[in-house]
Length: 298
Image (tube, rainbow, N blue to C red; front, side, top):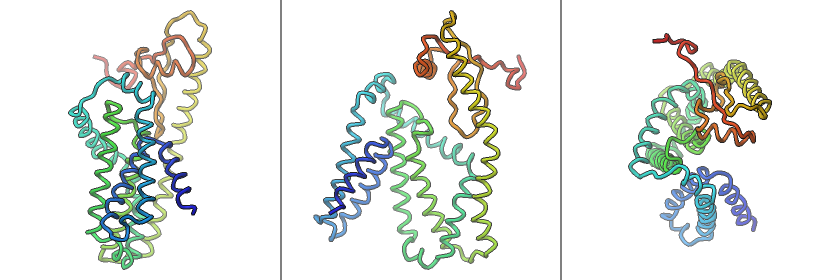
């Protein structure tokens, strides 16, 4: 008796939490639903109607979000974008993920998958019964298809590459693929990992996180102080006679998303920052000259 109310509660939350996560979960549920429809006991059962209810609720919330005034305003501001443009940026975005994003964080990926390789190697027989290559390949195919659909939707809506915070849903699927693939690889290894290897596999991620934290903290601290100082400067010059306030460029933000604005006060980032601070002046960043960034002047 609690199943339907709980399903409604969770699907309401998913549908409202994030457009891309809602679409991702809908696609995952839909793929599993189609697979289950091949099973005789599932067809026209109570379980089938509960799955249908979950799919319908999430789909309704996605439509509400898509046709909301904020989304329509964004489409008007960003202008037209053809299907050809979407596919073009989609291929470029895929290249960026494969050639830049993943290789630049390869040490994190290795540390992340090692414990799962260990898990697959330790429980070889159990894994082989539940996760064969025949089962893994369709999962990989549908996972990459879901990633491609989510990426193309984001590119179509934003008319360009999606920002990192908007790709969380895609990376979530990537992590699931990495976990399943790592467990499978561990199960097919011909040798049994020794205790020393097992210990290293568990320790490496912890050590890497600690080292990264110590390395990143000074950068983040410096960036945060500079960002706070920027806000204080803008507010202190709020009543100044100058029409444009020039700001010093922010330092490296490390692994944090950098909130830098442009040297052009007409830029949408500058205007958004101005609106956030309730300032009626133009805000722009001083351009870095070549000699200031370690390059020779012509």
